[in-house]
Length: 86
Image 1: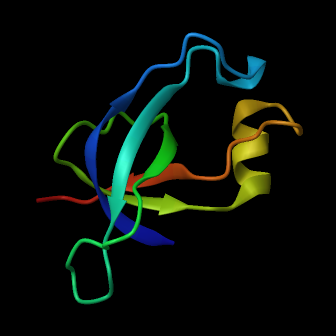
Image 2: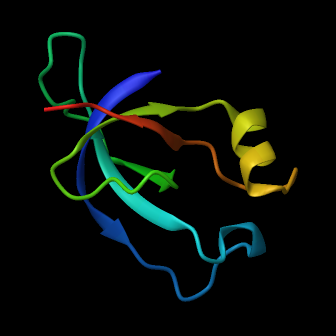
């Protein structure tokens, strides 16, 4: 698991069938000391209701995402598993 900050949302006009109705977030990952990573942000599926500015816990647990989306062929790798209280 990793923590990150939501910096925005993403919209796709064409997407995998498993993502129809799914909310996509753009998240900057945080390093161990709490600073934002200098790497590229990640595209993350959210079903908890996080929004811009929220700190979130994300996972790259593929099987868990496949189970939640009910599709074992989904291309999703990252998903929100928690929203950090302020």
